[in-house]
Amino acid sequence: MDTVKDQDVDIHDKAERKDNAKNIRKLMEARLDTREITVLEMKYGLNGYDEGITLVEIGKVIGVTRERVRQIEIAAMQKLRTENNQQGLLEQSH
Image (cartoon, rainbow, N blue to C red; front, side):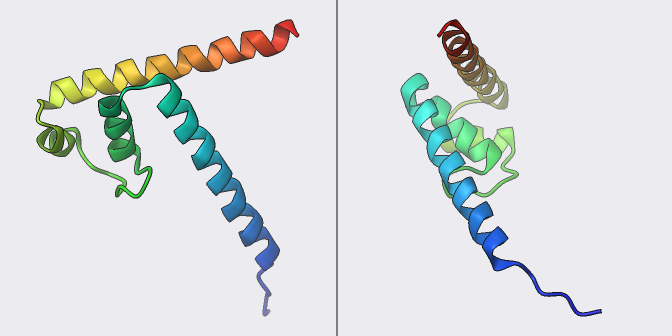
């Protein structure tokens, strides 16, 4: 059976992904330093970086050890979680 792909869905999905990427970037820029942003972008394939870059490869790029990259990632994610939790509390109080 032949099927026709709904192009409106693709356009909607692309627009939603683009909006999500912008929101993530704004949050990262507001809460994280440049090194933390770079680590997360490289690790998770954001902002034009290829997905799947290892901690060792990231460390070589930014000049630190794999373990230090891991620590930076954990600290950055914690900052983002804290911001997210604070936003949730603010929204609930209004």
